[in-house]
Length: 398
Image (cartoon, rainbow, N blue to C red; front, side, top):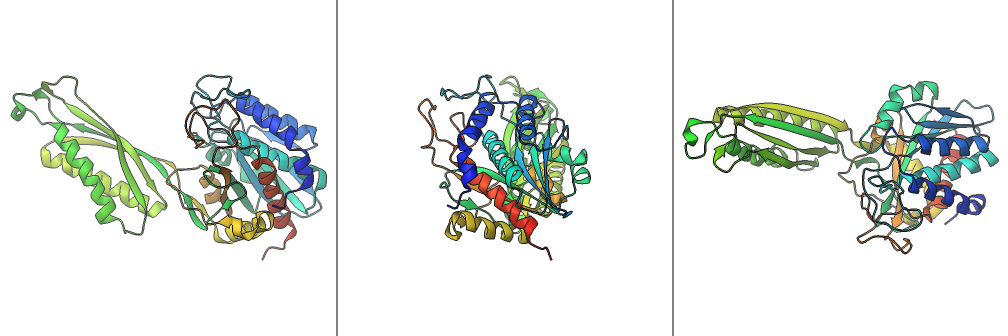
């Protein structure tokens, strides 16, 4: 790997920051301490800071030369509402909160890049360092956009990355097109008519209606959607009844829908509503159908993806920049990619053997109480950010 020497020299300092953030996790829109740590570091390095976008977001601004060109590099800052099982020294000090997705590491990588960029400034233009709150369900990217990030800080493109457990350290995963799916939730309340279970003909039983409905939803995937268009409907909750001898008045069904395109999402939502309403009508019941769209699919732009592939091949070697199998997980960087061209890529976090003694049982997977970020990634991720910024701003755009 072609890592930047000054970043390697700073690795211990940035690792200390990363572990401090890990020990003090904060949930979405509550990242006040984390934002203070980020803002202080940037200010100490002579980088102007803008705070408050998306409630707790921080944007660092590194300028050089006279060019008006600019790009954005993004790291997320928030933790998850989980209790950590690790017992090493930098484990969470706050029960019920944990950096189980590596956002502490993403923040550290961008800080390491910021320190180098502020010293060397081997580019002509502006690098916006975007430290984003509330990726884990809060839609912090959307809120930063609402607060005018792209108006206040005009940029041609925006880039994001995520560590990926199970992928070998030194490997980059990236695709043009879909990287992650849309995340959506539904809630259907079926209204029937309660009765004694011994006299079901006197009521309208919503339970068999729910059973028919759940089965029928899968025909949307197998018979309405093109087989080459991925989509998932998962019913994850069915709530009904309070007694074994009573037919309930209602049944509540909840779950999630995941797709890699808005077009497939539109189809699934429309068909689910029709199936729900007409299934109820066939049994003499009624329903209330709610469908909430959370994060859109994360879809990379072709030109920016090829740019990332080329630049990072120079860092890790072309053989280590590999295709990434799209995942049905979701990511709110999707909002940034809807607003500006860009690319989101994965950085291998290894197999978990980097963890020190004191980690809990289980694998080092994302959203796992035994997870810990691999600090070996800090110089690699920082070097990647620096090279992306330098190459983008120093290469004439068509």
